[in-house]
Structures are given as structure tokens and as C-alpha cells.
Image (cartoon, rainbow, N blue to C red):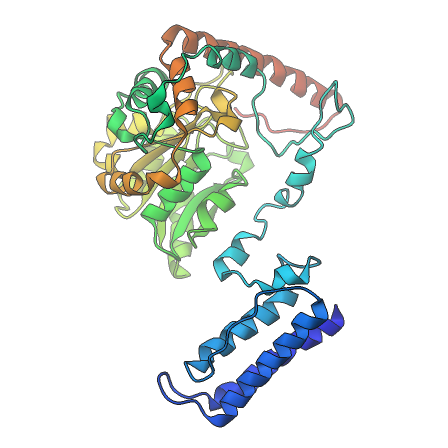
Length: 436
């Protein structure tokens, strides 16, 4: 590997010496440049022969814009030995240079993602794999999934139209069921099906939503601690900066306007313009609920910052099992007190947590912003949920009595499991956060 590395750096060194002699764009290259480029090509051939692999060779045209060919060659050869993606892997694969954004996307943003693939192959099962791993980093609700699945399997058979293309925004009847039986009943707002967009999970919707709102280099205000995958959902493809707002345990992790203002000012001083405030209620990972008064204070602050959009992750809205508090949606507060902010308030929800259907990949975006609607209608083909998944969940969500029964049963089972885990932790004297 050391010999390979030394070879791969030679063209890079030659590139550094050669750039001084490269001609301006469009001019005829010097003889020295041409000789250097051809020498680089011979060097690359040697590397390929030494590796013993049939890799695709870069085609050089030394008389046509040689500086581009030189940069391409050096990137391909030097990246092969230093790229974090290809470390310790087949050098033939390393020769196929990928984009800088792809290299960045391949880096784990949360430490547990480095091990997730292997752990998923060895998941605990009391019967088939009793020595397997219990992944505390993976939030899946299996407690009432059996009830959901039984109902799902009784959905009417698909017809021919379901095997064809449909509205990428989502099947209208399904969106109407979400509006009437999820948002109206549990988010306490009268939602219009036209304001609802479906996607293959809330993560992809969050990603595309942030892409639609902010420009590269902008900031996203986010209270800590936060759901680890936000680091992927928000930043990787969008080139956005997370502006962390440090909440305090002494204040039960409440988010205050002083915290918001301080984080906003610090970001602006560093040249990062916050465009999004990312909220999460019920809070992941804390499990706390934002009160109505807390949300009013937050939205009052946002109302004075006309460039900031609010994105609220409310994926656990139907899973609040505690008798101490009730879920209050940001959408409800905006509808009641801040109607002028409706165009910059966006709600994320999914069937993943509240209905134990994380594998179904069905997320929901609610937005009244006409420009963002136009973006999602235009790009919906990339995130569209399959018709069979929509039809099965439509069968569930259209049944008001079933949804009412399921939500109650799911909350009861969550409460029982919470008590079981809390008792075990207390017995072992392991401290844990208890939301007030």
C-alpha cells in the first residue's frame, strides 16, 4: 500500500510543477506541458498494470484544455489512496473517482451509523437470535405493529390503475383520509388535502424541504440534544450548517427566546444566515412536550424574523401516553395566533412511529407555502410513495373507529413498556431523564 501511495502522489507532484507552465484557457499548450501530461498518462498506466485490474483509463487529449485533464488525473489518482470511502478496499474501485459531494455524503455523520449495518444483521430475537443486539439507537415501535399489520392485510385488492403512475403528491383519497382522521382529530387543525404531500419517509421530506427553503451555506437553528439523523437529513445534500441551541437540564430543556436570539446572533457574526428553525415535539430524544405557552413564545420570536421558516417534526404526535401533558401541534398554535406565519410553517409526520410502520416508508409534509408546493409537485417523482403502500394505509386511515382504537391501544402498550423499563433502570440505579 505504501508503494502504491508513493506512485499515486507522483502525478500530483508533477501537476504542481506543471501548473506554472499551463497556458491560459483556450491558448495552445506549451511543449513542456504536453510532455508532462503524457508522462502522467504513462505513470497512470503503470499504476493500473501494478494493480492488476481492468480499470477504466482516463482519456487524454493534451492539445485540448490540458489543465482539465491534469486536474482530473490527479484527483483520480490521489483520491484513490486517501479517500475515506475506499480505505482498505479494492484499489480498482478507488480509481473510479466520485464527486466531492458524494465523498462528503459517505462520511458517517452520527457515530452509530458506522456500525448500524452490521448490527442490523444481528438483531435480537427472543426465539431465533437470543444473543443478538438490542439497538438503542434505532427507534422502532413494534408494540402494536401486529394490530396495524392485521388491518393492513385486509385492505381491498388492488385494481389495474394501482399498477400505473399516479399523482406524485399522493393519491387524493389517501391524503383526504390523512387530513380528516389524522390532522383534524389529533393535530386539531382543519387541513386541506391540497396542503399534504407524501414521500418515502419523513427523512427525505425534511431533506427536500430544507433544500427548498435555504441556500448553500445558510444555517438551521436546532435545539440540543436532537435526533441524530437530522445531521444527515438537513446537511449532507444541502450544504447547510447546524446552528446548535444549547438547552439546559436545570430548565427542563425548555427552549427560550433568549437562547434563540443568542444562537441567531452568534451565527450571523460568523457569516451564517439562519433560514430554518427545526423543532421536534414530542421531543426526540427527550420525550418532553412543548407547552402552548412555550410554543407561543417561540413563534412570537420567529414572527419578528421574516426570513426564518419553522419546520416541526411531530412524528410522535399520536404516541403521548403520559397523563401529565397533552401534545400541542405547532400548526394549531399558528392557526390560532399567528396566521400570518402559515406560509413559513411546515409540519412533518409519518406512519413510522405512531403506527409501527417504519418499513412502509410513508412520510407526510403539511405546508401552505405555494412556492414549496410547486417544488414538491415538480420533484415529487423522486420521493413518491408506491400505490400499494398508499392503498393499504388508506384502508387504515379511512376507518375512524379503527384509528381511535389503535391509538389508544398503542398508548396503553407504550405506557406499560415505559413503566417496565423505568422500573428496571431505577432498580439498577441507572439515572435517566424524566420529562416533567
